[in-house]
Image (cartoon, rainbow, N blue to C red; front, side, top):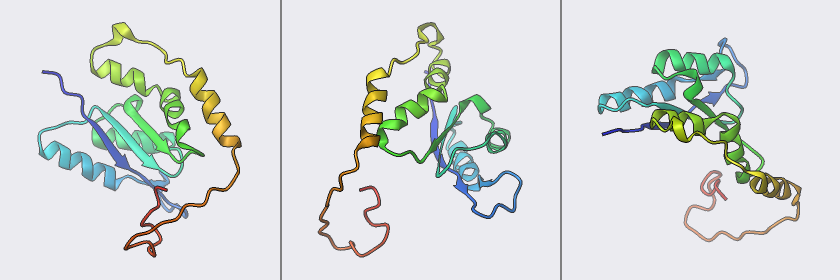
Length: 147
């Protein structure tokens, strides 16, 4: 049985970087250790951050998490959600997944022309939308941050 383990981790960017790698990777390393404790080894790391992970951070994660640098994907903040598949394609996440599943024979390059057009269209929209929230914890600053 073939199991593909993808770990979604978090790398916190440091505004005033005292360390040479510029991002805190301990949370991701801890998550990988916990996953290994349950008998699973991640094949791919998808790291959530506010800005793109630089080469040094990916190398550090690769060294301490035993995942190839090519299998570390940086999921950083983008202008709208339509850019996420484009971001994944740019980093060749589809190739890493197909390789881990031994499906390199069906290696293809996703055609996302219509998707790219939709992402660009969404970038040009600037009309404000008012959203009303009713709930118990609406006063908290991060309660509905996904909206």
